[in-house]
Image 1 (cartoon, helix red, strand yellow):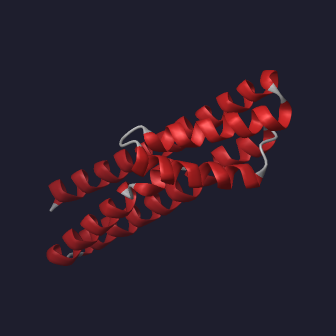
Image 2 (cartoon, rainbow, N blue to C red):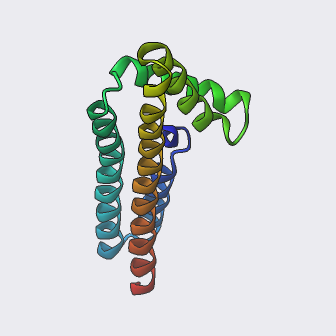
Length: 140
């Protein structure tokens, strides 16, 4: 959720595209196609999987939207840690009001797991893209 603010996969795709454009070889364009597919799959999966887990935990969609907006605001108010802090804190406060003190913390833990899962999925995709580019650059 928070990783949308820093489009790492998109930057990697653009970099590999520019490299393939300069190389103008079949191998470069194949590498670009693989990178584009990996980035697309990672982007879709990083939103679908954690979101599904949050909905299964009973966190409503409107709360995820409020948490995402809070993350954006938090990103600008408190540099570096503001986005995850805003996301998690808004979920905790709304869940505490909606379900009570005891039920708010499990929902917040689910939100933390969702953030970590989302970041992990994007990081794994970035490492795969890096490996594809490295192998492709060595092959030329």
